[in-house]
Image (cartoon, rainbow, N blue to C red; front, side, top):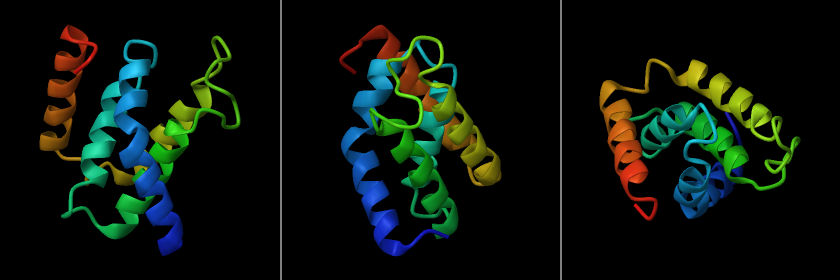
Length: 117
C-alpha cells in the first residue's frame, strides 16, 4: 500500500481535477467508463483502503497533464493512462460494484448530452 501522505496527495489531485479531465477526454479515450467507475469506487467509504489507494494512484496519473507519454501526443497520449487504469481496475475488480458502474454510465450519458455536465 502507498504511504498515507501519497494517498492524501493522490486523492486531493483526483478530487480537484478528475471531472474536468473526464469531460475533456470524453469520446477520446476508450476507458472512460472504467475511469469513472474507478472514481466512484475510490470515493466509496466502504472500499478497502489499499484498493482506494491503488485507484487514487491510477486516477492521479490520469489527471496529470504530463506523464510518461504526454496526452497531447496523437495516437499514443493515452496509451500509458489506459495501461495504468487497466491494471488498477484488475486489482480492484471485485470492489468495483454494479452500482459504481451504473453511476459511471449515468454520468457518461449526461455528459454526452451536455458537455458542461
